[in-house]
Structures are given as C-alpha cells and as structure tokens.
Length: 116
Length: 114
Image (spheres, chains in turn yellow, blue):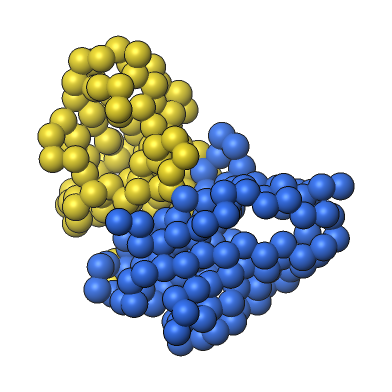
C-alpha cells in the first residue's frame, strides 16, 4: 500500500515563474492537507481540501497561491510568480476521516522548492 | 505568535540512556497532541499521540506525558538507540481551531551517540 506521494521531489524555478506541486494521497484517503516548512522553522498549515472542495485555506498567502483537489487526479498546490521567499519544503498529508474528529495525518516526502 | 514551542533545538544522548524531549503550548483550547519524527529528506512520520483526557500514553519505548496545568508535554524514549537520531516535532490541535489543523513546534534534533 503506497504512502502519500509527492512530485517532483525537487523543483527549481526562477523568480516570476510558476511552480506546480503534486500530491497523491494514500489509497482510501479523501482528505488532503498542505504544509510549508521554511528553513529552521516548524511545519505551517496552509490548506485543507476534500475532493472538489476547499475546506480551510486560512494558512494560504492571499495572493499567488492556490490549491485544488479534483475529482480525478492528484491535489495540486500552485504558486504563481514565485519569489525567493517561497523557497521552502512543501509537505502534503492525507487522512481517511473528516476534520470533525482527531485522526493521524500521513505525510509525503515533500517537495523542496528553490527559487533562484 | 508561536503557540507550540520546543525550546531545545538539539539534544545529544548516549545509546541506552533516556531521551527526554519537551514541548510547551500556550493555547488552552488544544486538546490533542502528537509527536512526529523526521529524517532528512523525508516527510514526518507519526510516532505517538495523546488526548487531553489522559496524562500518559505509552507505546513500546516511547511514552508521552501531558501536564495540562503547566501546558507542557514531553516525549520519553527508553532506551535510546542510534536509529532514533532524527528531528522530533510536537504538534497540537483542538476542536476550536479545527481538529485537522496541526500546529507544529520548531523541532528538536536528537542525536543518539553509539
């Protein structure tokens, strides 16, 4: 049973380009969460999605960042017009249950974004 | 505003001895706490959790203690093994903020010396 998969593992972009990060949740999981880890910091919640729905995007920067989890295919975190401050590790997690109960989130290996 | 704090960035322990990792939180609405372990270039791996209705939870070599009045939790690893060397993150969540929204500390890097 494959775990949470993220690709690419490493992504290099120049300032002003777009970055697309993909996340395939564990089989049977329909809840996806994105976190960002800046250097020397802990993971920070960005967004919680279910299939075709954004449940909570309170941790997402207001501009340039968007996320989706379509009916078919992986969840996508999209960063437009990247800046150097976007350089970070982006982790995706998934869980089988809804956000109304406590449950373990399973994390992917992360995508390391470097903005030149 | 750092709601979950891990004040020790690093810790070194001799193999076979006890490792104690500490975590403090400020929000009294948190009622579920977790510890994750992270190796370099990998994602965090769930280790152990505790609900606020308990003050202790044990799983093999790992025990988490929760002191609600002090808003403090700790992870004990006994005996410590070289393979335990990793970064350990504590995380908290609560019904008020959304049970799915984990608030992470900044991590403690544990080094177990052979």
